[in-house]
Length: 271
Image 1 (tube, rainbow, N blue to C red):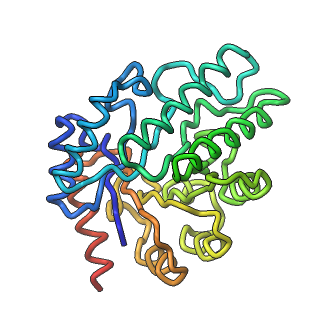
Image 2 (cartoon, rainbow, N blue to C red):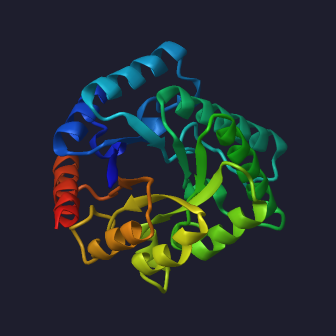
């Protein structure tokens, strides 16, 4: 089982130290939040900086596997807005972030960004779907996957369940567009367990990624969610993608949270 660390957990460190720490703890790579690379315009990172980041991650033993939290920066983006100029700006950023992911050596992008996809009026959901079609196509051009991440209704009102996200990506049938499962969001919004959801939907091929986190928003092993059933489901369904550890509440701090999570998860896998 290949496990990445979401780099914002240790974003206080220089990037090469993030990768070095992740590798030393036993992670197989980094899932990068673009805003940690540039808080204003990560989609415009110069080519030389992209090459440097890719090289550093590889040399430290934690290559960049994926990107997530895509639309936090620049501020004010939306895939549902009826404002034509804002929509064009958002789509440009998304396309450039796909290019960034390819340059960094990633194979996958996770579209969470709940505030940037809120449906407030008729037509909003259609615009969001159109954005996903474009993003999936851009990712496919680079041999990558673009994942629409289901997030619970406490965070957003579009694609707020795995069933809804599966229905969307299945109906759109766009090469490069898949969905995924976030254990915390599932715990806070689904009737079925994360393991049951994986067993239900993995065989259909729509799930391409998994976020490992507790419903209390801390790391795996720091709450009441059990992750042995999650790994059993992944292995029984022959899942071959990455999982990424993505806590939001870093207790007692980022580095300790990262260490606690990978120790807990590797212990499950070894037994």
